[in-house]
Amino acid sequence: MWKELEEVARKVAGKRVLLQVPEGLKTEVERMVEVLERHGAEVFVDVDPTYGACDVRMNEARSVGADVIVHVGHAPMLDLSNVYYVEWRKEANIPKILEVISSLAEQKKVCFATTVNFRWTVDEVRKIPNVVVGKGSWRIRYPGVVLGCDTTSCNVEADVNVFLGDGHFHPMAIWVNTRRPTYVVTPQGDMVEVNYERVLRRRLALIGALEGKRVGIIVSSKVGQNRRDLALYLARLARERGYTPHLYVSDYIDPLYLLGLPDDFYVYTGCPRVPIDDAERYEKPLLTPEEFLYKLGLLKDLYIGWTTAAQLRGTGESDR
Ligand code: SF4
Image 1 (cartoon, rainbow, N blue to C red):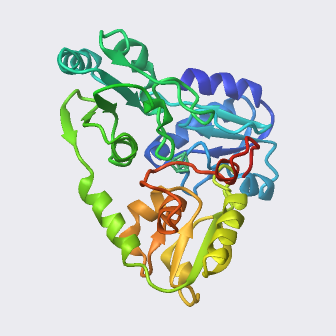
Image 2: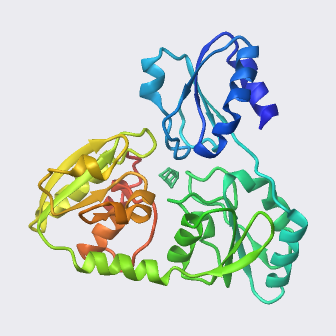
């Protein structure tokens, strides 16, 4: 937080900085700039939305001649030189949270997960008997942390999941990927059970009703969302199955950008939140890669994740 930002400010003293801040922290921007400027940095604030640790604005940094990027609010994910991540702790009522999770853990084995802003709670919660936390894939920096596109830290044996945090996308991904009863604990310590059966049914209905053979496969040019190889792989699979694929690339995606294009439906290989959260905004169906694989009969069940071409090819190579 402020202490970490001070430390980074010392490292970037005298440099030109591109400062990236997620929407929820923009009210703190003035103070952040002051901290950096106090150490002699020259600061440009990137006002584009910053979606996650995957969204590092390299082009904007180049366009203003920034020497470094200071990316606030997320844990490091990408191995990029000259990028400093500053995590941001959010407060939570830990006594109340421990109380509600303990009472659930008396009956059930609990898998606990949260976002990076609350990762400081993990060490406290995992002390409760019958609570487990998972490590997750290489994209997950800390045990017990999940991303909207990566809930691999929940791949542990448990009866129920408990997610601490705000919003619905993370618990939805946890529920879809584990199909276990899932509870959300708010930072204030209120707990409710959530169930995303309806969302899942809606997605399955969308896939089932797809018509037409022209498919637009969209790559995100965001540095940590770029799955170009996956898009090429999906295009090949599509072609083999009688579809006509078209490949597109875009940084930000908006329904307006697709107007006039010839496709019957789209597959978005950037952040999976876009096709699921923004489904209503798109005139034509927009699928996640996993949903398209399901449509092609190559997946038995839907999940929300970060499938790569290397995974599909069954090789361990890294790809984009
Ligand atoms: S791809 Fe989407 S869900 Fe995954 S880290 Fe980036 S913003 Fe979050």
